Length: 339
Image (cartoon, rainbow, N blue to C red; front, side, top):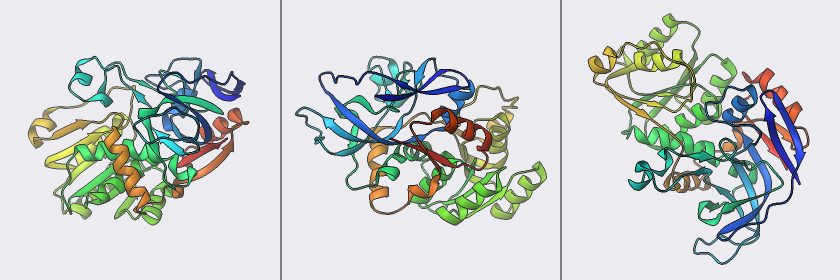
């Protein structure tokens, strides 16, 4: 079978692998399509904080169940499914308290363990979710929506609160969508104008602007909030500058959520946390409850995830795909591999 492998940074190949044999409690899945995460591109660039090489990548997927035994989860042969790709140890303090997404020994598919981007792969049945009629191209994007939804849910938003998302990639746009699902008003910024337009025009966010100067940021905060600051800010870039901007933009007693993954330090005057009495939340992965909530929103038509897709590549052309992503990332919101 084919598998998309990163042997080392700056190299992607479509390699041959043996079809895996499912273990007890696992299903054999046939890949249909997979979303390319920003973390996959970071792994290709050698910028990931977590990946090891060589690695079969991918954790956003829609796949057909080829083989599965009797199970209490309703997963059956022929079913189109997606799944929770964050594997927890079950024994650390986080797991023992039920915070399995924050497992200190977490292994995410395609990062610390082999991923889904192959013609066939296996997964524990309890990690799978029935697509129930969702188009495979959209089903493959449920996982990134879960990442955004989980982060935003940490802020416990109230209706009509104003949320400001930094970063109009897929995670940032979907953070705005998640905020609106809780009844909040969502605004977004990025340095890429086309991405900001997509967020507002295609996903109904309440406003956005191209963040090309500190002065314009200050002006935007004042215009939208009357100078009060936003009730919540979301960092969805993974950069020191956007972290600091989130602190600047949030109101006193506001909430700040960090979803972006960064390897760099921020020179941060933590007096602002005390002065504003901020609530700051990290966000990692997602939970099974997040998957169920997001699948419900998608089935009910709250959002059309396919509007995120900017590029589609054949699984046979991994190197060309990553070269394109690397060169044109500023204009690509989401890309998928078709198997």
